[in-house]
Image 1 (tube, rainbow, N blue to C red):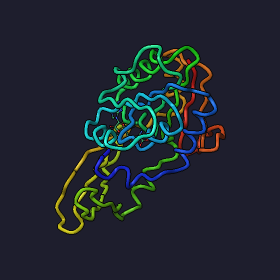
Image 2: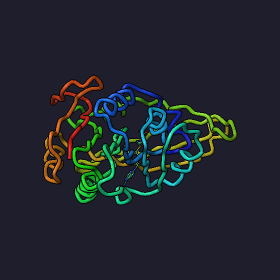
Image 3: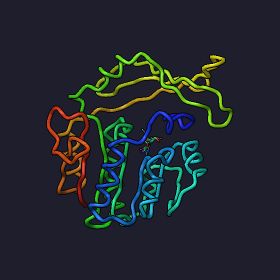
Image 4: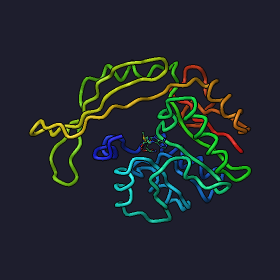
Length: 238
Ligand SMILES: C[S@@+](CC[C@H](N)C(=O)[O-])C[C@H]1O[C@@H](n2cnc3c(N)ncnc32)[C@H](O)[C@@H]1O
């Protein structure tokens, strides 16, 4: 994630509406937004009245999030799942495929165990992740055009280019480069990696750490997941 351009190239979508609606349905009040990034969605949660602990290891992203005007209650924290309080939240949420940044089985086990520890009894764990069978990367690779943004400080035009390296086992590697479109100066060049886990593997791992009522939605309208759906939105209960 590149905080300089993240909000501009990730505009509001159906997934964001879905997460707001789901939180409303479960009637949560105190929530943790793990991997909140720039707070793109967190600020909307705050506006909806939730008390939020928003955590991300990316210092620049949290700094950017802190600079936003937020109507509501958010505690921004630079950190990871270790920073979640114990027995404290009615929901822990990870949006925009945060679940895929945990590349190893150890790191995945740690984050879901911490989410379980952090929830009150009856609390909800909610996250989305891409279905490996839908092969999203095949579409990504066809798009040879850059994204465009503006440097919010200097007003300079920016281009964001993506280069795809490919898979080693279930980890997909790609690079994002942000350059000044006027001078061609490269401002950021970042390696990104995503782990693609199957529905079954995720389901079993959630069961293993003690979650129950595990369900996977397959779209942003609460339809149950099938083998073909692009994303799984997992919703389970402590
Ligand atoms: C695609 S962004 C999603 C940001 C935000 N949730 C949203 O909806 O816009 C993925 C985020 O995961 C964060 N991340 C990376 N490693 C993490 C970790 N170990 N624990 C929590 N978040 C992590 C990144 O810093 C990044 O902000």
